Length: 113
Length: 164
Length: 89
Image (cartoon, rainbow over all chains, first blue to last red; front, side, top):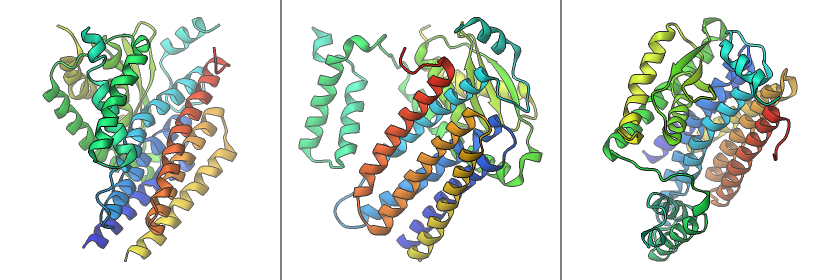
């Protein structure tokens, strides 16, 4: 029973990690590529960490919960780096399928020069 | 006097929790050392904390976190499906979300929430902090997206963090 | 059962790393490469966690935590560099 739960969690995690990177590789422009890694990998690594938590807790040396720390850290940092990357791309005017709003360019040309 | 005793009421338990997680043990020694660190670190870094955070309705915050976790799972499945179907089926767009939140913590939590949930990434905050530009992976109806963000995520945050 | 799942998972994560590496080499813009680096470190955390389960060793966690922290700081520093042309102002 434990084995099955662990295997399912590991497979789900690895699958989401893979899909995240697949999105990075096959999406057409930067802004659509951004979505794959930031979303799919948080759940992917998250469920791998839950699997590892269950695995080490079942080893008999008391429960193991420091995986929560990595999960928390990833969930806090992933949106921050996504926001910064997106902001940097808007600043550099990276080619985009959807037109970015005008006010970004106006504010951007005023700031930082 | 009170500031000296308990410099940062939210940071102290958070740091203690992180310490306990880091050493991976629930022994009394670890908890006491964690609380000690949680008391000492805010004391020495007090000057770096610009404003005290005040959580007004903890229950609303808790419900918000539960809704958020549910949405993250749904978002992941939705985005994974979009990626597997291929780029031809997506309609990316930028939408502008007018903000009602004014506090730093409120705005940053909202921006992080948007980045974690269904196919949206917060991209840019206008210098006057009134509008947040959000990039969506598959936006069929921009107005509905703005409406969802405001109702589902901004309304509870307004209750929790805004003084009224 | 578990070893089969682990073998499949290793394959999937390695394929993910290869795809990320491809994007890192191909670009075409700087943000794309930084995003690829960001994904690369998250994927390597996944690989380390899998190795930890496979070898039943907790040691890999220390490495995973360190990579999580350093990777985030690296991404932020690189984005800051793109935004301002300078890291420390």
